[in-house]
Structure formats: structure tokens, C-alpha cells
Image (cartoon, rainbow, N blue to C red; front, side, top):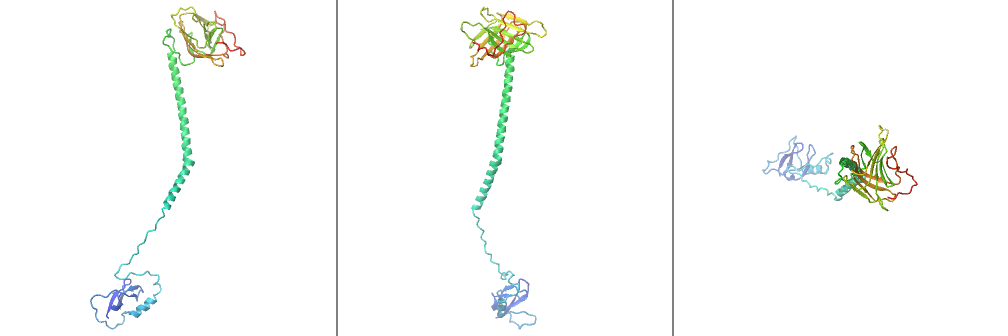
Length: 328
């Protein structure tokens, strides 16, 4: 057996060992690091000389005593790998994650979204939809009113004075027109004693009185008249136009038995005694008086006649709320 020396990998101290100690674990005599004695070099070592002062030597007995009683603090010092060898790494297996964890997270998120939807989003969207619907309905009503106003204005333009009503149509508006050069609107319509009276009772009171020829048990319901300006039929209706001009002292009256053009239609009587009608009447006067549009007559319509009555005709009697329904 021969000695060889090696250096402590921790503190660099040279340690002398016998070749028979190769592979054994010993403690460094300086830093007490647990060492593994390496294999001796391949060449033969020189004969060991007697130990000299200041030279450290170890033997199996010293190794065993140090191994059995490690120095203080050695237990807390991590073991050093053997000199010239690589530490063995133990593979760490990754922890398996349970598949239920992501499923639970997804379910929780979905539950929160459902609560938010039904508590906040859905009522908000419903309210917005209702507001949008109301706005659309309001816009539609506004549009319909505007279109109606446009149609009435167009019909008003179409309904003008002319003595040829062959292709004329009844305007879709309340009956109105001109009387003696002043705007005229039918505010009341009555039928009594064979006379259809279309009245205006505002600051310019006036009326068109039309004698309706009926035979025997004939009624106004469903009756129609189409009189041309060139007609000379002696049985055709007689027309009276009367008005009260504020600047004139006497009421004005004009009577026509021919020369005028008129279309007159009556609808069916309702259960309440109301009767609707349409008229387009144009007189051959210099002021081009005319009235055209829809009107209705009924038992509750009050009678109003301009001051002085109508010359050449009998004024209709005052209406009576107890009067029986007229027979149209």
C-alpha cells in the first residue's frame, strides 16, 4: 500500500490517504466537509515517507471515528457530491391537475354572466326596445299626419271652381270653398222641409241651400245627383246662396235654377239618424262661388240662418231636441 494526496473541493486543503481508502467517505480535517476518497492516480506513488511535522495524515480508524461522530453543524450542511462525479438528479413528477377544476371555474363564470344578464342586461335591452318601438310609433303617427295634411292640401288645390265636373272627384276633406269671394267652411248641415242647408256661422255667416226633389216615399239615403252646367231640366234642384257681409247693411242672396254644375251623393243612414254626404257645387257667379267635400247631417244639428233669412225661401224652423228623427 502507498499514500497519495488530493485536495478538498470545499477549502482546498490537501489530504493524504492510503490507496486502500479509495471510495471511502471521510471528513476534511480542516472544514469537516464529508469527502469521498478518490481513486489514486494510475502511476505508482513513491514509498511513503515517515510523517513529518505539520503533515496531515488519515487512516481507516480516523475515518471511522469521524464518520461515526460528525462535527457540529455537519447535519445542517448539504452533502457534497463525490469529487469528480456529477450529482444524481431525481426526476420530479408534475402534479396532476383535476379536470373538475376548470369545469367548476367555467360553471361559475357562466352563472355570474347569467345573473348579470337577467338582472341588468335583459331589462335594459327590453326597455330600449320599448323606447325604440314607441319612438317608431310616434314617428309613424307624425308621418301619417304629415301625409294626411299633404293630401288635404293637394285635394284642396284640386277642388277648385269649374263648371265642367265630368271628370271631377269629390275631395277627401270637410266641405269648404268660396262664397261671394270669401272663404267658406261647412260648420253645420241640416235637412228639413226638402231643403239641404250647408251653413257657416263664423264672422262671415253664409249658407248654400239646395232643394232636393224627392218623389213619394223616396229618401235621401243612397240618393245621388249629377247636374251639368248645360242642363235645362226643370225638375233639377234649385240653389240659393246667401251671406251677410259685415260691411254691408243687407244680406246678399243669389238664386240659381240652371247654369250651375253639381255632384251630390248621400250615404246610408246610421242607427242614430246621422247621414253622410259628399258635394261638389260650382255656381256661375262672377265671384266663382263653390263648395266641395264631405258633410254629415243629423237630428241634433242646430239650425242657424243668417240675419234676414233667405229671400224667396222659408227659413227652416229651429231645431227641437224632442223632435223625432227626420225621415231621410
